[in-house]
Image (cartoon, rainbow, N blue to C red; front, top):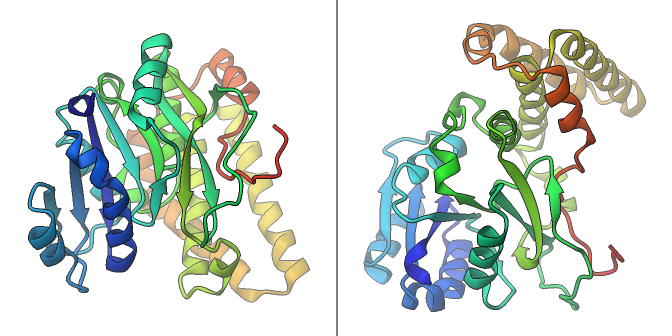
Length: 302
């Protein structure tokens, strides 16, 4: 079973988290799963640690920091197995028989190109793991907890690395929709993302992340949405950011808005070159899909 899978991890200066993740994967390594890690120019000894402790891991090293999406493209280019699991360097599986669950699901669902996992966000693991959710078709997936059927990856363009961070999942999901592939949510596979999401608002890069999130939505509007839809949604997004700035009286929200608009102008040629408009039928199909299931809480009933 393990020979069918590769596990892909991008990392940058999070050695202690990565150590925990790799320890959790050792049973899969022994089962023959190929692990490929891209170290995005870490300065904390990440590459030396991997080379010494895990010589069986294939290690890619970016000489300078190139960003998450660039690194994910590098990793996907190395895959030689039918399936490729991507997890963050601060994430680990809590479910048992993960590979069997994934392989069996792909075998039953010929139309599925990507599987998104159930993800619990928190520093400590959840007290309860059970969920009564059913698998279903969804809009998109979480970049740090999903698996590709590699056949489908080869049918679409690579992630747009000039996005840098955020938006690449929707880009890929929309490309898949154009090719008549689907993204599915598989709650039987549970991932623990060891992050305090609320505390992220205090991180130094919080506003940079917000800026990239805003512009990523815009990039995908202008790449995929029909002309009569994208302008309305673009203007609505601007309006909501202005209202947020007014409500919070946070000048940085307004600054982020103008910086994101500047990014749009700078990348206008790229957006035009990558334009792959949905038909109205495809657009309506996309809008009717449930949103990507990013956060799971143990007290959720569904």
